[in-house]
Length: 528
Image (cartoon, rainbow, N blue to C red; front, side, top):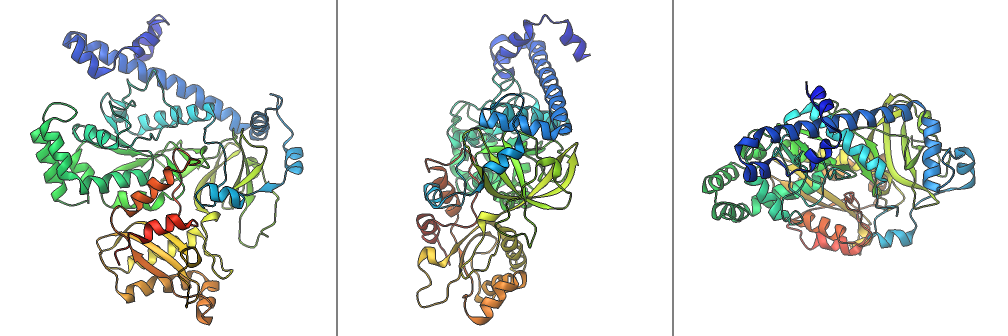
C-alpha cells in the first residue's frame, strides 16, 4: 500500500515532505489535525530509505560478483587513474609494502598506527549508512520511529549524515549535540526509547560509568527542568534504577529499549562484552561497519548473525590480503586480492587510500568465515601492532586477551571493563629487575587483588606462550605487574587519545601503550 501511495505522489513532493519539520515539531506547531501528515512523512522517509537501500544493495552485489574488476576500479580511484581500472598486478609489483615509520608512530601518540586519511570515501560512507539503517529497520522496525532513538555521545555510529532523512528517522541530535551531558539528559528524559546510539562501545561504556558517578546531579537536572519541563517523576525513576546497580540498568531506564548501535573498531570487544554483561544486559548490539585507520573497511549486512561478522567490499579504499598464518616469514610480501581469500585462513589487511601512494600494512588481522559472491566475510580477531615483546618474544593481542580472560575468570566477583599494557622500558620500571609487562586493569566487583591472584595472570600467560614461559623460567623476563586503576582512568586515556591532532574521529582503543606520557597517565591513577 505504501509503495502505491508514494508512486501517486508528484516527484517534487517527496523532498518537500522530507524537509518538513520532524514529528515532534509538527505536533507542537500544527496540532492534532495534521497528525496524519506526521505519519505520512515517516512512511515516505522509510520508503525513500528502502529504495536507496535496494539500489545500494544491487550495486554492492554487482561489485562483489566481479570483485577483481571492482578492485581495479577502486585502485584507479585511489590513484586518480583512468576510470576503467588499473592493472593491480603492475601496481603491486611496482610499490613495496610499508608500515608506519617511527616518526609516524610518534606523531600518533606513540601507537603503531598508520597515518591514512581520516575521511571516509563519501560513497562508501553513504553505502554503509544506508545499508546499515535498512538492516536495523528489518531487525528492529520500531527503532526508526520518530523519537525512538537517542544518541548519547557527540560522535555518531552512522558514517554519513542523511540531511533529508535524518531528522525524520530520529538520527539528528538535539540542541547541544556536542555536549555529552546534554545528550545523556535528553535520552534520560525519554523513557520510551527503542534504540541507544553511541560512537563506539568504549564511548558508551564511559557514558554508563559516568552516569553512575553523576546520577544524583543528572536526576536533579531532570527534576528542575534542565533542557525542558521539570520531570520530578522521571528523576525519581532514575534514582531508583541506579540504586539497583549496573546490571540491567539500560532496560530499567528505558523498558522498551531493543538495540544498542555503535560503530565497531579495534579494541572494542572488551567494552562490548562488559556492556552486554552489565548495563545493557538483554539487549541486541548492532554495528553498521568496521572502522580502522580512519576509514571504513567492512560492512555489516546481517544483524541476525553473531556480532563482529563483516563483509570486505571491493572498495574504495583498495584492500589487499597478506597471509598471517603461523610460520609465514615476516618479510613475506605476497598479497592476494579479495577473491583469493580462503575460508578459515587469517590475513592482515593492506590498505591503499586516495590520499596515499603507498601500500600500508594496517596490522588488523581477519579470519575468513564465509563469502558473499566473490568477496570474503570476515571476523576481525587481533591487531599485530598491539603485541608485547621485552626479550624478543611476541605476545600478540589475541594471546594476551585470552590469557587475561582466563585469569579474570579466577578472580571471584571480578568483571573486566578495560585494560592496557606497557613494556617496562617505557616507564623505566625495570631498574634492578628483569624487563616485564606492566598491566593496568579497570575491574568491576573487585577493589583489591591479592598477590596470589596477581600471579594467576602471569601463569595464564605462560600457559598461552611457550616462549614467554621459557624466558620466565630462565629469569630473562620478570613476572607481569598487575595494577588496578581508579574509575575514570580509561576515560581520561581516551580523552587524551582523541585530543591528538592526527587522531581520527573514532580512534581505535590501544591495548599496548608505547608513549610514556600516556602510560604515566594510567600509572598516576593506580589504586593498588
